[in-house]
Image 1 (cartoon, rainbow, N blue to C red):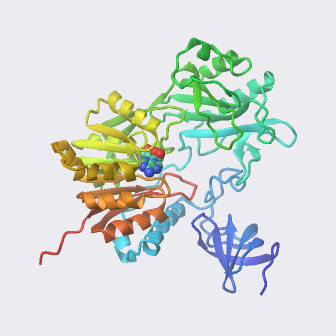
Image 2 (cartoon, helix red, strand yellow):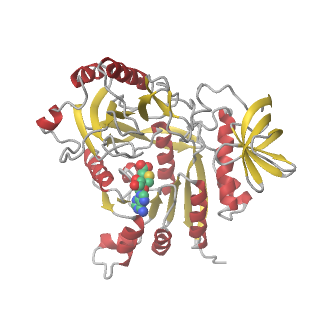
Image 3 (cartoon, helix red, strand yellow):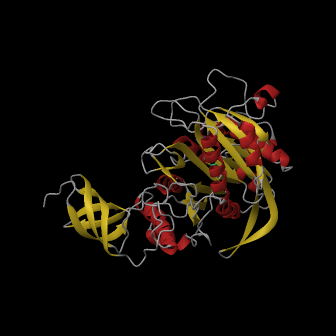
Length: 504
Ligand code: SAH
């Protein structure tokens, strides 16, 4: 059989790929079909043919999978965000659990029985909608020349008008509509990527779910040659400047919204895809919003809220988990895996603004956080101070450089330095590319009692766990936490303990 682009076939979808695509076979030839689900019988059109497989598009569902549900969002197939929205939530969770299991077996080389034995039930959401505390909406024009805001159609930069993404906060819609109305009324232009002309590029909206505080940051095509207008500068000239036509009217209207706490403009004069520029100027209210996270106790697989909490200050550019409800559960699981009694020395590598570090500090003797972004470390220190946490210290630098530097320091004089070289627990929460090899080797040399690995990519997780287990650790527990409901990304947390030498 020779396969060609645009041919149409009828195929039974048997499996689901890592990106949520349906997988079917015709005479041993694999087809990867966007938007198709296991159990579908469908007509598909080939879009790209390779030697042993092809990509295809769903043309018509002949018989729907029993796991199909009516997608709530009318745009879900155009938008790249919710790849598996048409799959029942129960099956979404099963898909994520098995995606992690498969990677640990295939890449990590772990025995499937071992993985199944140690993995706890996935942590799903009761209501897997409107969980995101952050939204970034681009502004532009429709084909008819109408001012719009919405989201980029999958893998493109053309905007599809939609002011109410169902993963985001309900307030987003009103904020976006106020902005659109203001821009129409006072002829404020949207930025055009093709020409580099126009003013309003994006709006970033953040909401503190527990505090109810709202932040609006309008990213504008302005600011070339300006300097010193750093976030928080209370300079009346800068604060008083009008960046947007009839700015006061816009600010007055936005400020009426319940919970509005911070309104700023971010200056991004560059012709780039990067959303935020380096400078942010607060034009109304505070520079940051606050949010609080509670520590939960685990009781079997249930989570019970405790009265311990940490409050975080979040600026427009800070990294902060986008699903705070699930982040509390993820971090609480990490904390329970660390088995802290109040005396331990703990390293928290890749600590960001100290979110996990400060959770750990509530129950540890001393916590040391390491993070490569200096502003994040400033936030971490400020967060520690504001929460009266005195047992957390933070270092700027790469984990793979900071950690060996401490370990290799000759002639350690103080008790603290010795404890740092031989910690009780090391927690890592690396970006998708996982941990650097040098970092893993140093962890192995430090030989902590326990290692807790928080991962946002199960393929690099599997690779790293293999190194740690070959270096004398054993996988003890693991749990997937659904932070990105309706999408395919998976977060999980793992406990490794030292393999004890056999004494018999
Ligand atoms: N634990 C934090 C942040 C996790 S995201 C939280 O949950 O909020 C991963 C973090 O690793 C990012 O903040 C990123 O800036 C940081 N990072 C990336 N490479 C790093 C490296 N080589 N060393 C230290 N930190 C790094």
